[in-house]
Image 1 (cartoon, rainbow, N blue to C red):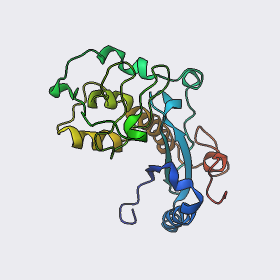
Image 2 (cartoon, rainbow, N blue to C red):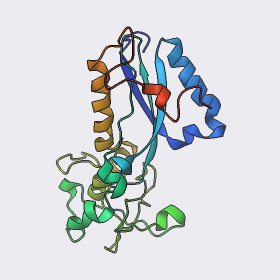
Image 3 (cartoon, helix red, strand yellow):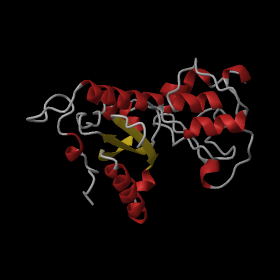
Length: 223
């Protein structure tokens, strides 16, 4: 960062970063980037609010240099606030499809285990969070008598079917679970593009990026 000096950066982490016990770590992250000259803000996003068929909360940290308009968090589309994408919406056409490794439609045979290893999707709700290290204990399909496949997990993460994972089941499980949902990333990227297209006005904060970090519920210094 110090060497390349990008006009804007985006970092993502789990919701736990906002917990009281991690406050000093978050302060250090903000202080380190601020020392490099960045104006830093952070925001908690719920992926389901942006059209991802999954309940997934993640923190995004964004920093901008002084010659770049401050970042403004993208507003969730109204349609998904009222009616989120459900597991049924994302998966129902695959429930009777035979396993197909080329399509990443393969699933774990791990036996039932407590808590996470025994979760079953609800057809009328967004899916549970797709995790990277579930060791095969990925959630069960809402209708089929099996765990969800890697293709179904990828759909829950909002990957298109044309995106193929060139790896075995466990490694694909990690790749899918570690990913930022592409649809949510797209909304963030559009907001980044807007900031890059608007330099910081000299007299006032105009344009779509105005207001930025100060409007954030999780504005730096707000604890």
